[in-house]
Image (cartoon, rainbow, N blue to C red; front, side, top):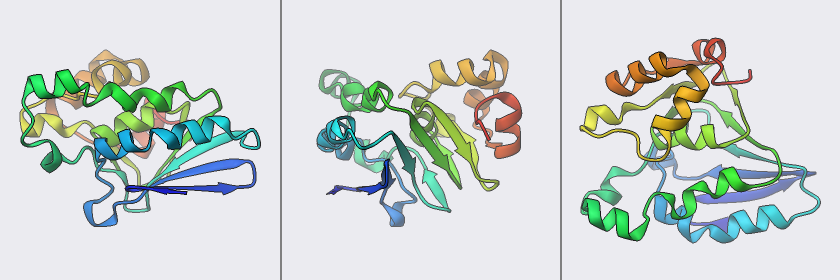
Length: 179
């Protein structure tokens, strides 16, 4: 099954969701997730699936939201459309285990998507971060709430306020990733 920017496959008892925007380093187009509401319903309804795995590529799991897609939106536009949270949280409501398989960059919304999963497996090349501060904004899809739960308040504040990235080894030491 294919949705805009999302591929869905079945491998035995595992549903595999792949973010598919190679030219944009897997930038997340939030409207594509909204259009893919059926994707989540389809995954939840497959009795043969025992878990779901979210994956990007070796270069990037997801390098955050597509800022160009949001450039013309004002605060009230985003708020009234429930632009970020309308479909975004559906990943965390799937009642089967959801695994984030992260290689390469998981930044901004990509890091937030990984944190919505039940646990994160990281390749040695994985880099996690919330670099929104470099655009003069803060994380908008749960990064300010989920990240402190994983790594603690001090480390989360440092990452959010400086835009510093964390490699896979540090992420495992801090409790962000399972292995």
